Length: 611
Image 1: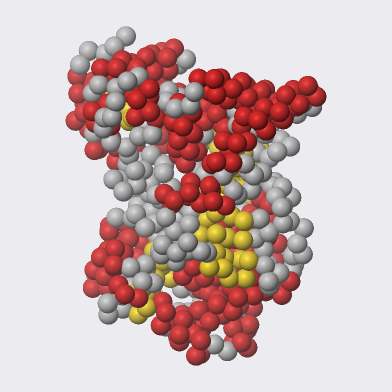
Image 2: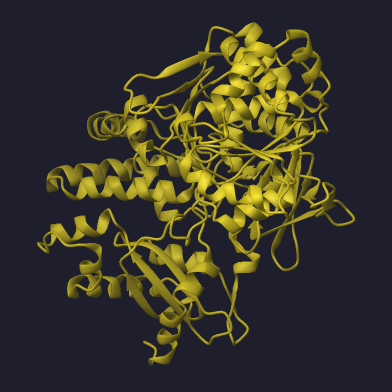
């Protein structure tokens, strides 16, 4: 367990503001929140006592704007202090903060604004205003006012600074203390809208009780230094970052370091050498690709030394995975290899102090897990949904299986339905989806089980193994069920292939769209004397096409006949949230990809297939 800090009550009876009271009173001088302003080299920091003062001031400012208990307030900002502090200030008023993904399309924003009935939105600057201002004139959207964080870009709208100034003038300590104490554990703490992989985003309402029970139970599965620092770079619209970047730090009196630009997270890791790091699978894949690209440029002797040290690390991880004591000779050899070979490279990357590393949101490719195990880094894969307040199952240092997503957290039940769908129930599972009229529509059956939409199996030791999303399973024309994620992850084990989509629903065989890895493909080409070339040029290069064919053949050799890729096309442009193929949480939007490349997919079925 990370912390033995005093709780100001039983977790199921607490609200989030009670934790901030404790932190300010008992840990007031400890750092709570740090950020950089613009291109500044230095970090600005607020202590826990300063955070509570800022929250109180902002609460008065938002109250002066007419924000009332129970109403939703929308926010679209990056990971900046205005976002983090506003979230807590609104909670203290009894309002419900709702963060919207910064990459959301105008129609998604309009849907959330209508559905949530919010009268106020707090946005970052001009880029956001272009999508939000038209909603002020939309008669179907209740939105009345915008507050803008970037004062120079606010135009006619209120600025965050002016809201704070009003708060300084109007703040009354007695009113603030009375206000937050009116909140109850069953009150909504936030609404998180799902990222919309298959349709309109759904509003998931989570209570103080849901979140605080989740935080306490998750905390019991980690073992970190007191008040450990957290690099906060994922969007706050993602349940993972809301837990790791807001709620768990309140529980732990930890230090949140905001990384405003998610592409700068690798630089922040190199600078800060964190003891904990969470990344969705795509983040771990890209970090692995960057490390592999560096290794490819090293002398062969050093590459062999890394390979040998990695073999020792993976063998050691295998003993720990099976619950066995690591043989003394292996432990000594690993320690020597780690110090001599691995640690110098890990220090350069800022990864040398890691004690807890985790992933969630989608199945982690096993080759990526094994790669990091070769560096002495065991990624504790977890599984959960927005609807379950975050994680349902976790691996921990004393109980893990590489490739699985762990065992259920305390107080949560799992059951596998006849069709393989995972069902769950417990106090951390939400009550239901928000309706447009503000009521909640239950998503549970008569016995309280929530169907997660994920398919998996439980092994004899109680570890959960994910197969796929139920709605994403491919059913071929011959009636065979195929897991696209299994096929995609198998072909992505080759370093050239960064992304993949497999298609075959209602068809007699599978085809695939493959995307070159933007980091590893150029390094692979350079090592073979191809020279500098764009990804588009590489995608058509004969040597790259030959190697891709070998990669597909190698993947097919490990798959059964129904799962094998019969035809494919290599693409050059990486998929991302900005171009719509990935959700903001970096999950594949299969429908979008299939629609975008529909004619190309049809071409793959028109030509004779490769047997």
